[in-house]
Image (cartoon, rainbow, N blue to C red):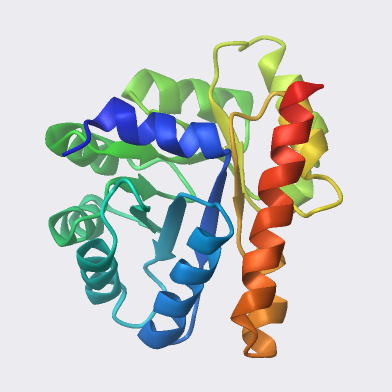
Length: 216
């Protein structure tokens, strides 16, 4: 059994969390396998997926933590966080800061990634004990927001979600993001065409661009 810091390191080493908003469990399973084949070692099942808790439970049963770190996203409160954690989720992601949710993650020693949009919110997340702060929605700011926040807060572990694509993912990483969250830019076209190989190839492209950006 991997410890919390080992799981967090796996996510950060890869540099990308695949955000899945599939409209049924079967598609979620196929996407998980596709991104794993593409080299992504962390997948976030959003609580907006029908039967999300059961999907998480099944994925945890299918993949061990060395193959894929399974987490829950769009978690709005402590109650939802606990359900996901009991289903096997190793990390919890939220679009905002809910102190009770953060405390729930700390109680169970799970990775917590609350959301923030401002310097004040980033500081509040870190003071609460967040492991990573999700910058959302990234599409409103662009990569410059990471560099701007890292000026006064160089220690802030920031993970932008929304607005990250193959053209700009390198910019996000070079600006100081510890990792990125990618949803529709990774899966939308493949799901629309029922082409999971396309999702795998897109995942590989993201992983390679992140690797290249970190070497620059």
